[in-house]
Image 1 (cartoon, rainbow, N blue to C red):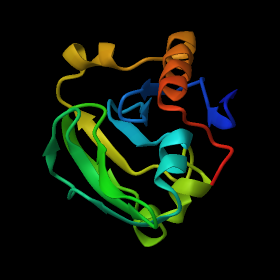
Image 2: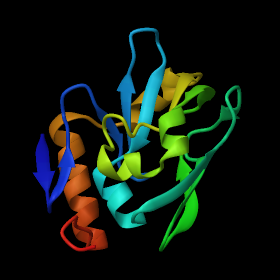
Image 3: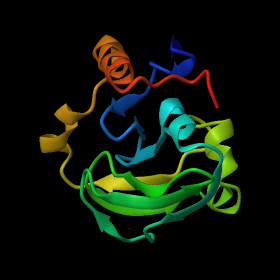
Length: 148
């Protein structure tokens, strides 16, 4: 686990869409699981509600996958890859705070079957390149996970 300005970012098994503050984990069946990064959920604040697109919906990379609502933010979370939504995390729909409490575990938001992985894979970063890009974006935006 790498910690940047108080925010946690697991390296093993995770890749990142730094611009949308979403993580991706590639699953054995060719699908992906995705959710908000620690900095993403921290910036949004205590989540009250998540309204995702429906299972079966086709979404494009960078477009709305869900709407989130917190005490200080209402807006989209964007898909890190294009694909068809195949599963939603019912536990998160019932209790959006799971995203705040465990963003890389029980707080995952959706699973999708990628449709443009060959052309979009390069937009996701892993390892040191991901950590460097995250560090740079957090510095540029003056973000951290210390304040509430």
